[in-house]
Image (cartoon, rainbow, N blue to C red; front, side, top):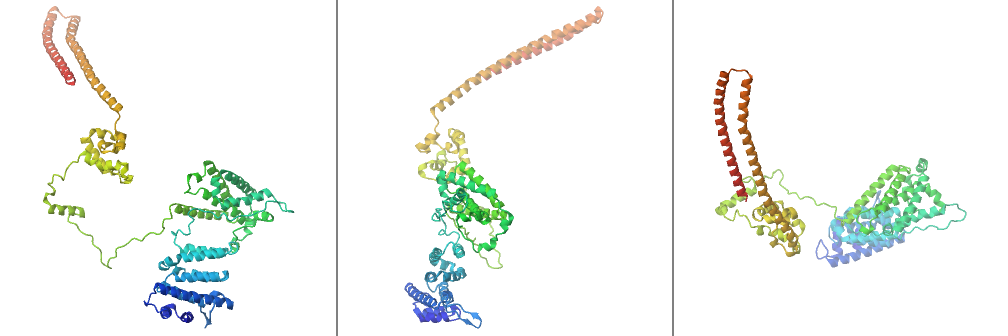
Length: 607
């Protein structure tokens, strides 16, 4: 112990003498690292020395962190206790001793000191935050540090030591990583022990609206436990009624800019108190205080944000009527915050930003607190100045070159009959049938029906080999194409066609086969009738032409010889036309006979 007393007085840096002092005091088996029992012995020596130094500081009436401090040549040297802590911190950082020893000494020091001295001790902890947060030390002492800070928070007054409490909380937020779950309120438990007491009867000699006074301070009961509003509808109606009364009073008594500027927010921040006095005598002054109004209105926004927060079960979610009422109240609260001087718009914008961060925090907790840190990408180190050349392949890429190499090694690969082979339907659809079996337990994302190439090939095979299964695709999708014999009984029943459906299909096919011959026979009969009418018209046309010619020649007044001559010419022309007509009739009769023969042949083919 005397060796360490001399060491803390040494003005040199700890790396010059710290390890040597430990070796002389403990005489370890290894020169640079202590064993478990040796660490325990050293810890007992240091804790005893620390206790003696604290006792000496208390007896001398000096502050703990300044005990033994000397002023030499205008430079202040640290006290003996900070010097001892620096030596131990150096040994822990270099892993000469157990890493959690420094955290144990800090915990002992805070327990032995008063709250006034603890503030100086915590200042030392804040100054060494980077070293204490290193992985080799943090893993050994994070629980001890958390216990130390929680003990300090319990000893501090939440009303009088607000700044010190804030320093401790901020230190924990920086010391622990974001993904650390120890500081996360996973279950969302509220501090219901924070009760706000107020008077229920009007005091003597003071004129005050007692109903409004009780209504205003009764809101704190709901602010301290917002979960009770979503469970009990009657409480929500009561809270909504009380809040409406308070908001109406704030709207009826707006604050002027002079009243807002009369309060300096920067000066008041140093003496800020988290709880307001509930005396009825102060009600008039509190209503004129912008900070008091903001205190109430911000509590309303926090409560509304909790009620709308995600991650709740169905019974805890607000109803549609409740959502509408929350929306209306929220709009009124934001409007009042915007109107409250000084700098109402800036204050409202800051509050909305904070609540947005809080919503993201809630989502993070609901998802199981995944880590925020992203692993750095591993880069392959290359020699300086040397560019890594891409490999060159014989046929352009690795796959084609490997395929060509295999062909050289195995000449029969291209002539193998198994190389190009159409698989059987039952063999091809077997993997999909196994996916459809629920007892196999194959997840949906790994089913073969998600492979488009597999489904496309299967439909082509089914169209060639299994038309009945292919017809089930339109009704049941790709799973309906699978042969029924491959499916288990419970799945097969979904895709089997019912007997009624089969009989209906058979009847439809029979009626189609009987209707088609009748339509063909009717069409052939119509063709014959039209052909006969056309022949009659062509045979009657020459006779009408001869009569017309004779009548025209008589009317023109020709002589008998001319008429006879013309008639002979006309007879000659008539004979020619008759011969042509005879030939036309013969052709028409032949065409009609051929048409009849073709129609009869068609009917025979259909029957």
